[in-house]
Amino acid sequence: MRSRAPGIAVWLLVAAVVLLAYLFAPRFISDFHSRELAGAGVFFIAIVGLNLLTGYTGQISLGHGALMAVGGYTTAALAVHEHWRDVWTIPLAGVAAGIVGFLIGLPALRLSGLYLALATFAFAIAIPSLLKKFSGLTGGSQGLRLLEDAPLQVTGLSGTVTIFGHTMTQNHFLYYLTWGIGLVGFLIAWLLVRGRVGRTFRAVRDSEVAAASVGINLAWTKTLAFALSGVYAGVAGSLLAIQVEIVNPLSFTFLLSILILVGVVVGGLGSLGGMILGALFVQYLPDLSTHVSTAEGAPDFIFGAAIIIVMLLLPTGAGGFLRRLARPLTTRLYLRP
Amino acid sequence: MILAFDWTQLAQQIVIGLASGGVWATLAVALVLIYRSTGVINFAQGEMAMFSTFIAWSLVNHGFSYWAAFVLTVAISFAGGVAVERAVIRPVERAPVLTVVIVTLGLFFVVNGAARWIWSPETRSLPNAFSTRPITVAGVAFSISDLGTIAVSLAAVALLWAFFRFTKLGLASRAAAVNPDASRLVGVRVTWMLALGWGLAAAMGAVSGMLTAPALASFDQNLMQPVLLYAFAGAVLGGIDSPLGAVVGSLLLGVLINLIGTYVNWVGTDLRLPVALAVILGVLLVRPAGLFGRPMETRV
Image 1: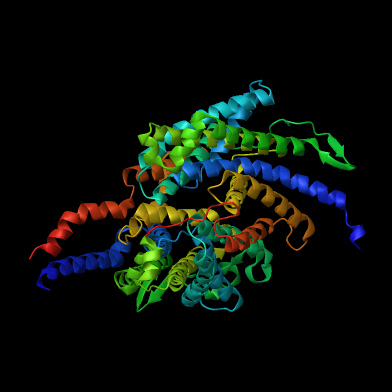
Image 2: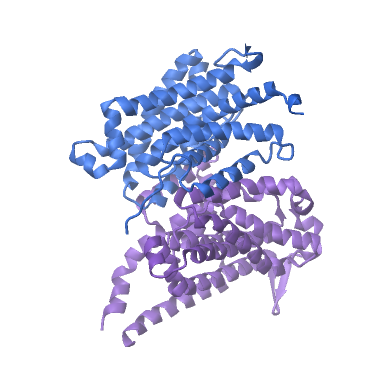
């Protein structure tokens, strides 16, 4: 056990640095930028969830934007119709999307690869039209406006929020809320993948036949991965609704599902550490592209080119790159007597 | 009551469905071509087709007739497809599948952005390729343009089939898709066969785009996005590794969507695609590899 001590020390150090960065970041950045960081946090949570499904279990989903819609609409409907306070709806949003995730995971028992991708894709395509169809609950194409229709339920409408005696601006609060949940979610995902559940996930990813023959229940494992991933997406969607204070069918387009998928691959499939980079990539790159040129179409061109260049340079994503960088270091720490 | 049923309307709706299904079939075949050679769904296929359509529009605006522009655009698109494969797909050939998928997504943004950068975003239109006169067959009036669209798309698919079936190059590229290592041993230049596949796919996409655009009163840079969705669904319905399946799947989907939209009032226009996708999902649950696909066998 002695040989593991330095490794544990390094991890504790990393955790301490992350925690300090989380707590003190808002002191060094403007109000507006902490709002943007909160947006990146939403992507971070959804990407960590998709990584559990795609990176660890090997099931492709093109429908995570729609799962976020389930979470976002749960929050908005509870706040507007039932007058719940917005932040208390987050757990329920996660549960709702988890159940829906479980349901779309059911076809995965029979379908694999691209056929499964089509099933999740069908769900992503169906959601906006379904939201318009059931307008009594969802407000149709107008959507639900938390700010106008449930002002008492929106946290920080007065501009400031007071927690434990600390007063902070709404944007700082959103930053702390999103990344706080994000870091807890990250920790849970990390504990999951390094334990028994993670090993069954990886076994299913690497060979379904081999996994089944050592006694892993494929159906249970796959639907569990879908449900877990759905919980993350639901929480992310709920936080998005709280941040933008409005949900409508256009908030959760197919493009959102695509961005989450891009984020998870850029971050590195099967690597949790890279997910922060993946989230920052999809949050900031579209904005950065508009700084380069604002000509019609140019930002999209630059964004796409950046995706391609990153993939050509880092085919296994940022996570794979970091792993390669850290390999000499970690092998040394773990293997030396 | 069965006598009151309007058979004329049914026949017309089926032909309209076949016309849209035929257009989707050309793009679905393009998807299958790339899936067989590269192993991924090319998300940029629709945008590449859109780019080709805009090239055709520019040619028509410079005084070419529709059909001259058609032939020229197919040739340009073929070259463009080969160039794209060489430039961005070749370097990630050995990378994980999802990496290649993300590259095609990047390509989606690049091509869409480039088209809006080059051609301003105002709406534009292409001249009609066929006469707009209706033609009467057995007492039922069909539009010539629908029948022409069906004919052109099926001809394009048939031409492609003949290329793969009867030419040596076609045989070589089929071999490269099935067993790259063995093909390399007998002297097939496998990487160039992949590029050929991308070129042919781009050419098929161009056909699809140029059939889509004239049917619309006006179009912009997003015209092929719905077509890509339908083509994807059609290809998966037929079995993603089967070109014949892609054609049959797309035609079935076209008819299905049109009939659902016409006869099931509750569905209307909004829910057409979701309902069609639900039906496909039902089919897939019974036949997990699509109608014509071969179920995969795995060796452990």
